[in-house]
Length: 224
Image (cartoon, rainbow, N blue to C red; front, side, top):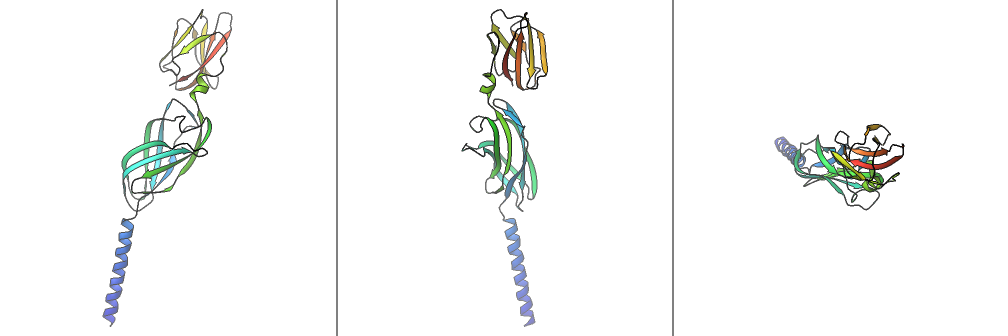
């Protein structure tokens, strides 16, 4: 009788261990966003590098299609797809994904302050948590069509990359370019219609033309 009890106990323990082992290794991968790198201010029309850290908190390897989505939390906008990839995340680990060139478009975000939610979607995986963050979104039309002053001249292309051109009548004097904090980054005599902007970092700038009577005319532009 004692041997029967021992055999039954052994079978019970073996069954429990098998069930636990089978349950552990068949557990669905569980994904969540731990962190995301975003600038405080994002300009429409510029590309940004974004990095996202994703956790697999389960005991199972994730190795399948992965999406990272972001959505403005206070409107009914469609989610913005930050990442589409096929990759693996080991059980119980974190992995960083780099998104090198992403445009943040008006289709997904509103002008001004945005509160956004970021979450992963993996095939055959569970999304267990999302991350909330925020940034200030500046539309290009609020830059390119902002208040202008002084004499009439055209500034193109806007946005600019390496060069810009000024077009107008009787243009003469000095050209100064300054950033949003008022720092002068370019100040030279106006000697032709072309202005080299390749040395400027991307962002919003003001171009000021001072004529020979020290009368100032100002335009805004975006450097890509």
